[in-house]
Length: 273
Image 1 (tube, rainbow, N blue to C red):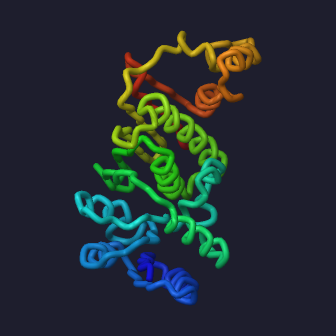
Image 2 (cartoon, one colour):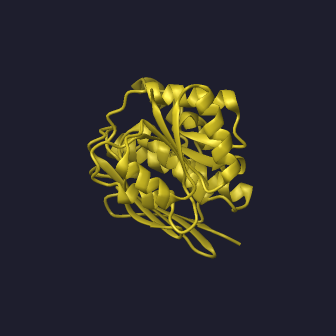
């Protein structure tokens, strides 16, 4: 029998999730806060944890940080409010559970995730303060999906337009770092920092690659200002899938976009208000 931990400070959410899962013969334990969840994860084996990222006193990210080095970690699904999602998360929908909970959706996600084989190293939490989150993320699509689910919760409360544009930019920058800088190798890591001030939202992403130069990106639209279709013809000749607009979208959504000299580290800034 698969063991599942449900950790959420909202009692109605805990009760609802627990009943749905127990009705399907899963062994379910619950925790009303992150510290209780951490204690249970340390003492017992779970196959899956449903974890609300932001809980009073101690966050879900603090739980992950405290568990660093533990040999046997459960798979993780993020619990997020309905209004905490952005369009980018739909690409990785199996990695979050939204409130209010839909029974069939929950069971489908849980079964898929429990049946999914993974060799992904854990995400390492360097800082878990609400205003400063810093993570070391394996270069894999699975890790990217989980991270985007976290970031969506961090941006709850921002205007819809800001949340959508920042989420889209973050997705493009993260995927570039994982695909091109990390070569999709889970043993390599991308350092991701999230800083939230009263008037500023900042992402800083550093990948393990050697960097690039914009002049060498002839397959990307960003290098062909005024010629919107030229990069498409180049991509076709190279056998690349249609696309190449990612950095153009990032530039359009950023108030400031800064690269280091090697261009393997980028800072995205969005001003608030």
